[in-house]
Image (cartoon, rainbow, N blue to C red; front, top):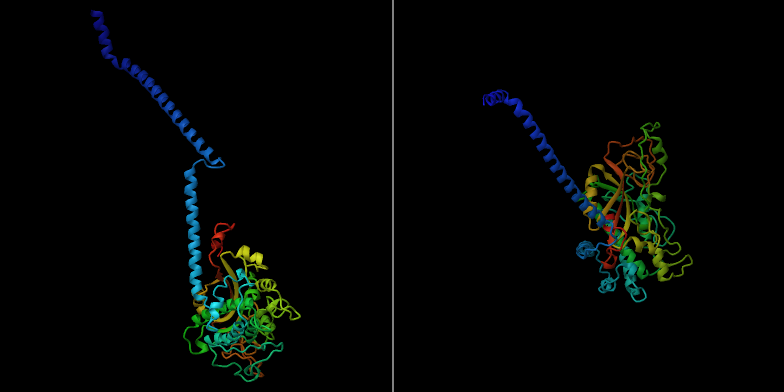
Length: 463
């Protein structure tokens, strides 16, 4: 008994050294057991997740999804998107139809042409315009062009006589005094460019149905461009107040040259004793309205196929005439001319793209107003390129059309060359600069649901 008391006394005094190893062993055993349990649970969960991921990856490898509900849901989305495209197309067409109104040439003229759209789909074997109505339309065009010029305060005085090859200058242009240009004009429109535009409607005889239809399309676009110029100028009373003072040229359809992507670097202002740079000296004898600068970049007028007659004056078949009138008239979404009907059918399912190019003498402070007017016009002019001081113009203020350049800086311009010994320095303080716009006008076709969703590209996205 005494021996046990002695042992308990020793244990009581040294109990820490007995209890600590036991607790350490118990702790290690518990840690190993817990760790093993967690490891087993992690491995089990990881195996489950890997299995589910493998199943999901296998679904994407199926050629046809086995879920019929998936197909039904996807078809609903496709149908909804197709309906949105159809509704947008219909809205565009309806809005434009309100603006593309045929003139009241005669009381029954509109009834004769109301169903002839789009032009390329018209069956000319059964749908034609009576000859008397076509004669009336020709007279209407003769009056319409001067009317368009008067809307912007310009004078319609083309240098090329209708039906002739010889050029004629107006009485004002032929004079040698300093008042060659009619000072009552708010906008000076290059007479040579007017002649080119007039030749688009210069038919050797009564125009055909096709010629009338395409001519009216040109008239609508011209009206739109004139409206843009008028909106930019506003209610001005004198040319000095006008934002747009001169029209160097307006080009439509096949006359429009392809967009230029060259970067023009201004020449240093080092010149001869007259204060003119080398570039300006080269431009001294250039007539702004002549040559390619005013619109000779397209088909020539009166050549074979143009106007429905060949070189010998014999009428072309309707199909041949259609191909001739359509060639290079429209562009695709890459702004390349469409050469034939097949190309037009492939790239203009929703709308035909008519290229437009204008070179204007503009107060550069009003450029924003000009671009806003383009966007807000009835037939929106989508400006794709703006060239400031384009090649063919000096870097100073623009010279008058047909002038020699000696009177640079004059506000009155002039068509004749002044015989004066007074040296006029370029008016570099003027805000007026030549600006060239290249853009697209869209003529929407009637909605054709067979064209929706069948094109390899979204045509609306390309616009």
